[in-house]
Image (cartoon, rainbow, N blue to C red):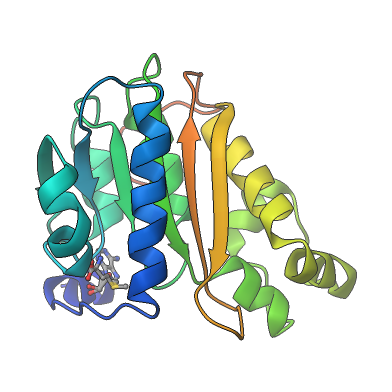
Length: 212
Ligand SMILES: C[S@@+](CC[C@H](N)C(=O)[O-])C[C@H]1O[C@@H](n2cnc3c(N)ncnc32)[C@H](O)[C@@H]1O
């Protein structure tokens, strides 16, 4: 069993700032409702049936599905066209999963995505290495202190650029909030209009499990 699958098989339902996470999901529901005239069909990808399910999705969702095993593997091996709201509550990077969502979701539908980003601003803060996935997709260098500073101070702009690049969809509504005062881990939510993903869904998963 891979480390990611191992991690995913254990239920860790820790939530850095549960109140902010709940508020962001309620905001997303309200924004999505402006475009989709029914309750959303929710796919919860990291630690499903946890606090967010109990506090938000159980009441608000028309249907609720939790992924099993590694989230990236699940997303790239299942039909995603029947979901309109994706919860990517990862520990690390949600961006591999976001790309899988973009490639698998109904391209004609308005969808909502809410994510925990424990990668982009954290790497910028610690001046560490840009995640390989973002180096590749964004053509960003492995290390660049000027870029890291810009990402740290203008995180919403950079996260938005990543979301746009990975999904190929217009952002109709977008909100960002830090998880706490240090602000390394960020939460964002977005309503995405119809669009065509920049790259086709791969037949076999290529990216490794992320988010752990
Ligand atoms: C922030 S917690 C999720 C909290 C949960 N959403 C809730 O509402 O309480 C992150 C979760 O991701 C899980 N996880 C870590 N790596 C994973 C992976 N590669 N695939 C799926 N789940 C993973 C962890 O076990 C943990 O349950």
